[in-house]
Length: 187
Image (tube, rainbow, N blue to C red):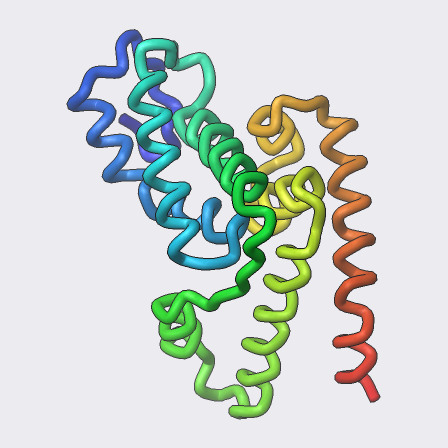
């Protein structure tokens, strides 16, 4: 399999599926974490994703990239879990992610600047959590995960113009959610 996940697969064997799981687990976790906002739910979405993918492996014909296929499944699994747990809104920070941010920090930066950047990241994550599901998925796939408009639209099974509309509404809504925080920091 190529590193881009573009290999044309005639049959997704158990061995090849195991390789896909190994190569793409962190990728799927990252999507799930951004959608769910906490590590426990994200881990459950990862499990749901690979279970669904395994069950559907016979239908995977290699017409789409493996990453696109997994994005679609992970996004759907996250949205289903969000709907199921809509009463439970929890914002949690993954300790490993916090450690990695600190570990990667540019030590030339002043400690207060690093703290503000971490605080801003947490506020953005909290803001993303407040977005409606359709806007959240567009923002996460496009702005957080860095997919192209075409890839994100394909994952969400919508047109590129519909993705752009959701993305615009999501960004405007997120900007409004973050406005108070930004204004407090500016003054």
